Amino acid sequence: MQLKDKTAIITGGGSGFGASMAELFAKNGAKVIVADINLDNAKKVATQMGGFPVKVDVGNSASVEQMRMAIFKEYQKVDILVNNAGTTHLPAPMETIEEDEFDRVFNVNCKSVYLTAKQFVPHFKENNSGVILNIASTAGVSPRPNLNWYNSSKGWMILASKTMAVELAPFGIRVNVVNPVAGETPLLKSFLGEDTPEMRGKFLSTIPLGRFSLPEDIASAALFLCSDSASMITGANLEVDGGRTI
Picture 1 (tube, rainbow, N blue to C red):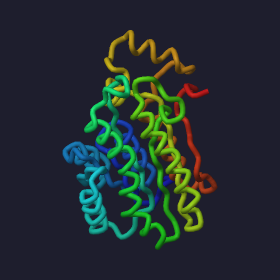
Picture 2: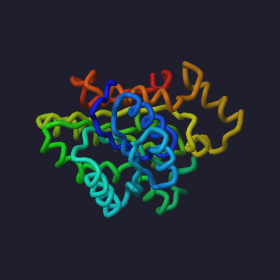
Picture 3: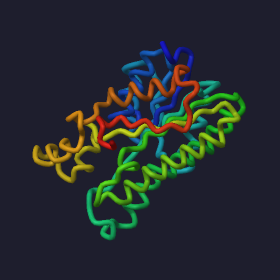
C-alpha cells in the first residue's frame, strides 16, 4: 500500500503503460483518475479498479482546464500527476514530416506538460507537496534516425523535467522522468515502421536484456518514484530499457 490515501492523475491512462500504472497504483491504495482522449477506454480501465474516468485532450488548454475542474468536483486534493500520454510520427526522413504531424507530436508530448503544470502546480504549491512524473523515452537519451521530431520532443521532456525539479523543490514538489524502451503497447508499430518479425528482431538486437518493455515494467518504476520510498529523488531520469542506452 505504497500510495495509501494518495490521489493520482494518469494521462493516457486508457491503454498501454498508463492502464498498467492505473491498475498498480490502485492496488497500492491510490485513488486513481484515468484521463484519456478516448473516454470509453478511460471508463473501462477505471471501472476495473474503482477509479475516476475523465476525457482530456492533453494538448488543448481548454480541455486540460476542464479536466482539472472535473477532478476537483470529485476530489479535494491531488497528490500525484503522471504525464504519460504520448504519440509519435512514423519513421521517415526529418524533412518529410508534415507540419501537422510535427504539431501533433509536440502538442501531446511537450505542450501537455506545460498545460498540466499550469493547472496543477499551484495546487501542489498550496499543499507544499506533490509528485510529477513525466514518461519520456530512451529516444530522448539515445536518438534513432528517422524519428527526429519524436526524439526531440522526448529530449524536451527530460530537460523540462530537470528544470521543473530544481524550481519546484523548495515547495516540496518532486519531478522525475521514466525513460521506457519500446514496449508492447499500441505505439510499437509506429516506432518500428512495420511490426514484422524481422523489424522486431532488428530492434531487439539493440536491447542487451533481449526483450521489449512490458507495461508492468514501467508501472513498477512509476510506483516507486511516486511513492514516499523515493522522497529524496527528484530530477532523476530512470531508464527502464533493458540496457539499451548503455
